[in-house]
Image 1 (cartoon, helix red, strand yellow):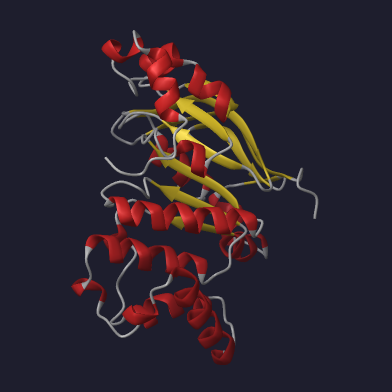
Image 2 (cartoon, one colour):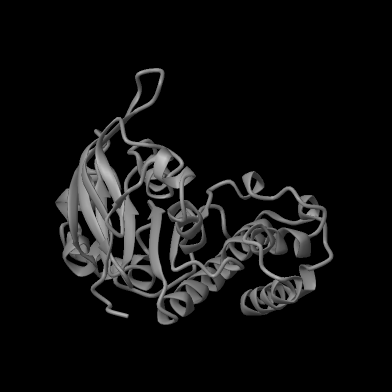
Length: 270
């Protein structure tokens, strides 16, 4: 497989919610196979909406999203083989893990997607075992999801998506609310997934972990436009633009060199 295969094309994508609230304005970018893209922006900038568009859960109000050259529309997803193939190739980890968990045990949760794909039960069992082992959560298999901690729920939500073995992983604020130990766990998993050839798009406003989870930054403004689409190092050096986007405070701007040094560190502890 070519590392340069074009997966997503977003052309002048805008989205307005039914109540008239704008979420994205004229957003254009591309994603190639194997990319690790951090979608940065303050709360309300449109990160979650963009991921839902990339997952086919929403359609743009104007503009278009293509996946492997096919327009990502409700009609395309419901008809023919494209929809089934797309759902198998693209996995979405929601910000709220509770939105994804509804089965009686963790094992059943992780088995749900492979069963929906129509895989033989033997294959389902193998995928569940492999996924739980990969994430180091085999000990949670018989637990009820509602009895898990917030961090454990996040782990299980990720396992539910990985059991489909998707090529593309969309993650909405996966680091939010995790303690330092769980952050280290998640960074390690994301690195291993990327090494295995997965394409990762991670929405976040957490700057200090960026060097470990992304090679490229798509920066959204509070006005829902793209402020920057650049390689990671270039993005982190543009302190004034990060201030403009609301991700750094003005008083930090005066110490840009210090911030720059800090953002390139690999310290996980507060």
